[in-house]
Length: 281
Image (cartoon, rainbow, N blue to C red; front, side, top):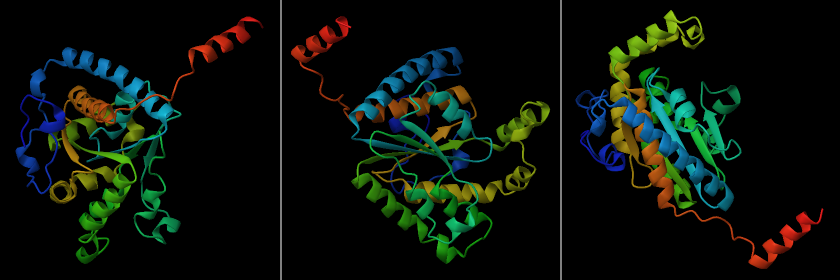
């Protein structure tokens, strides 16, 4: 994998079984834009308009379903993607599901129970802010369950996602790739801005100390669970504007590929009749 010019659908997609070394992938890449932020922002604005139209068609057709999975280290930009990339979409057809520490009721069930309850219905886009992958990331790094338990979950997740895909769910998974220096700066930005201090959790520093362990865990996730039916995209995320362009491009291309059609329109006679009724009021 590299960050050459080209369609992000190809450039950043993880091929099934591909070996991943995150240290060798540049999180500060801006691809073909070569740092041209304004050009990228203009391109992203056009993509947002396309996404808005495609999402409305998806909702109206009530046939396809789209699941977007966002994963990444603290401050990698999951909330920022949701705010920026999905700006302007119809809130009736888009929903965000955030997965935090499991509740006692959730712990009484299998780890996918709470996930399955949040998958999209027909005509819906659902964005997972963190996801079922926490159960092969956090539980591994913090040794909450034995390796024999989390190790078999890769195959279980692949089967789960295959079932969703067979039932008509399009699955796109994005790993937001930042480096240690960028995370440090974003933590400092939060601390230095009173309006953003609420975002800072002292526990984040403990997680930061486990950076290498998390990177290894993510590499295994990317290698073992990027499939033809549920691909991973490793998105350079140091530059927020480039991150947003990459994700917007992938989303728009994926939705276009569904060839979404609006429901049948009224006949000319029906349309004329309805117009006449309204004009007569």
